[in-house]
Picture 1 (cartoon, rainbow, N blue to C red):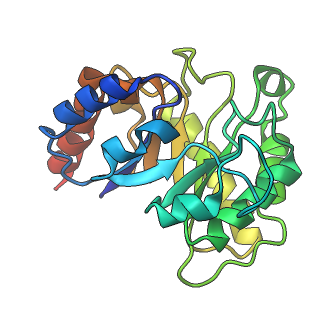
Picture 2: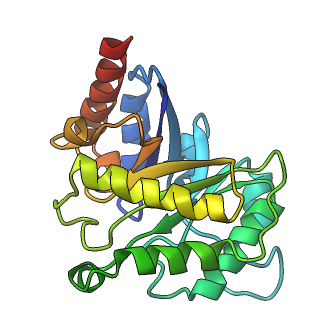
Length: 242
């Protein structure tokens, strides 16, 4: 079973560091993995050989919006995916803005990677289901999916991102089952479900599951050794199953 691997470089790499990483990645055998690289805007051209994703975009195609990035321009550059609602962006973006961005991404023939996840307080108050439902439903509110369009939903518990802490395989599967139920209620059939949140070479094997379509990497995606180990593990497990 093939897996999607989304590499969110965030703002970790300089141009020279990005070139160095790309040179090393050229040696990798990705096997059954569909790799999506989300570099910084300044490093887009370095990774143009891969399926490109943006880390964010604005919800208008053009206009007097200083400092924003046009989804139309990204699409014209060959970008196929765009993260939206990442926990590091939700502190700035309202649910309404996330919804507008989803619409803009689809309108410009890209696939949105919609991130949802609960905070530590939400988890302690047992509000995970409530939070995920609100985030997901507000993100797709009024969105009319065409037959050739797809949603990618990435479940990223906010308390886990960058912390080294992770959910168990069963907890991940249970949460994604709940998200599937929510999507079914909205009659959305064309989607993929990812898990993110401190995924690294030390825990990837323990959380690999046929019920997870792929994984969203942060810090691990800018380390060649981490990325190499994760890819080798995923391909090795899939090879064993065959």
